[in-house]
Length: 344
Image 1 (cartoon, rainbow, N blue to C red):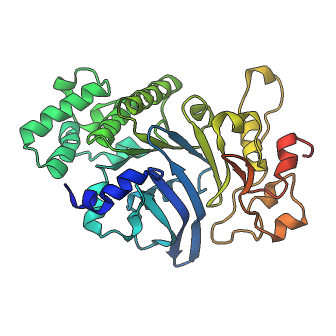
Image 2 (cartoon, rainbow, N blue to C red):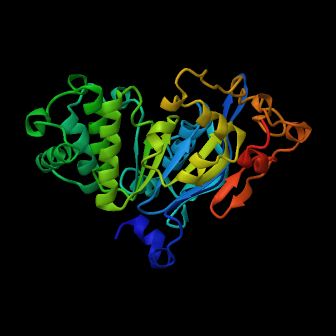
């Protein structure tokens, strides 16, 4: 039994809390120009076999939250200042680094959004996939290479045996992403975090990658956290959605309920900005303005400068995450009006 399994203990296995739980997480970046508050009280959870999609514009804190979960924040300038990240009930943020390493890659793994940058250009893809087995399981180079070929075949890279010694630049964007997925699932993790896994891929390849992730999830019952800004990618794969804005969760809901009737003006704006075939000829809706500077987040609700529902209360009081229904929450003072469409 490994140190981390000893730490988790039989009691944690018996009680079965959410597999991964982020609780009131705060992350800031301390720069010469000031402090950027990138994550401001984020809470969400994911269970085994479940897919949670985390949505939001660039700069909303999606990827920073994932980096904090993985323990790969660059410190300095990034610092976790408050909150907990619990895996099987154990707070990862308080574990010694050696135990944290046993979890990273083996129990919780991550697919990064830019495969060409994430892969090392001077090592073959087979060597990089095999590293997971050499480092974590102590396999020989020959055995690790065999496992790398098996994984390349598992993620459906053609002619894996012939291509195992190729370098990242010799693969297409879609195939490089498959290599990244192979590395991430090498040790059958309990939780997989996919950070924009279909960025810069054409629509057909996007669909293939998402289908592959869903298939791998079904095989191993792993939890999947899908980070994206693309609402179209999410609709068919997610069970629940958490929408982020300015480092906070502004809405959480089961996927179909959120698409049917959003309860936050930001979510509603995102949905209205999606092109639809039945709206042919109409002007495409857009959310006015820009996301706030994280060094100078507005008081009250951070979305109020861009919000058609904003009133004086929104400018002075930060809304909590109101309970809209069982399993649903909205950080909007006027969520009832948003939900029934009576204003804006």
